[in-house]
Image (cartoon, rainbow, N blue to C red):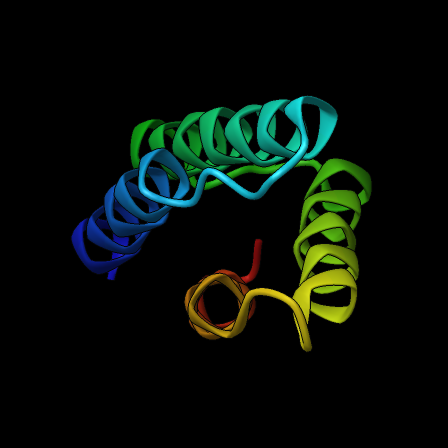
Length: 92
């Protein structure tokens, strides 16, 4: 599941690179989120113990991005939704 999530984050990053209509701050926020997801997945792979507070915050950040992009960026929304589901499936 971690490999699938990493693949999804890579797709998100590729989509970000191809979506010029995003503002600089939005693009930076999404990139920061992608880095944080990679970090949490690596932590989960390295150790079974994850801090629930940080994990819930990360999932909440992804869900918030989904809500913000629903109408303007449907492809990003779809990727973010799947990433959010995979994070939940992993308990992150």
